[in-house]
Image (cartoon, rainbow, N blue to C red; front, side, top):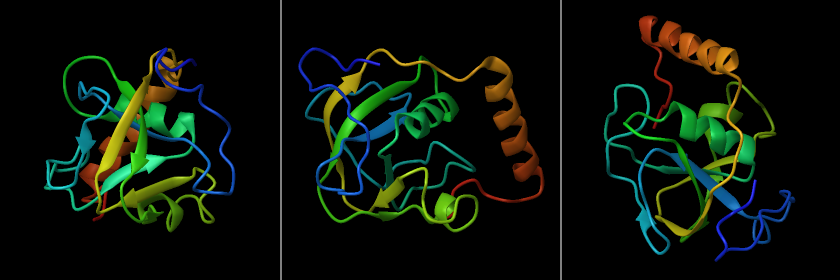
Length: 148
């Protein structure tokens, strides 16, 4: 799991939000210096206009984001820096993982792309399919994956 040569190696997340790397998983083709902003179609659910951008301090959560994002092409994981305040992602922390063990966050402010993790391991095909099946069941029940 090495980032590209122009960036520092990802580190383990710490409790200090100012000293740890953050990641964003997507299928979008971005480059260093780009901004990821709210206001575009969400990668999930009914794809409504997103009020937030999402980031995580764990590579595993970013892998899920890259694998489950809509669109063509391969999943990508970017090293990002928030440009404003961040808060716990209530889509995960309030419902599935109280206490935020996934270290998942959201912000109304853009994320600045600092680099890309170019070598990462995806989930096993059966694990990925189980997650897609779960999300499909939620959709059938009218439950949005992302509640802005």
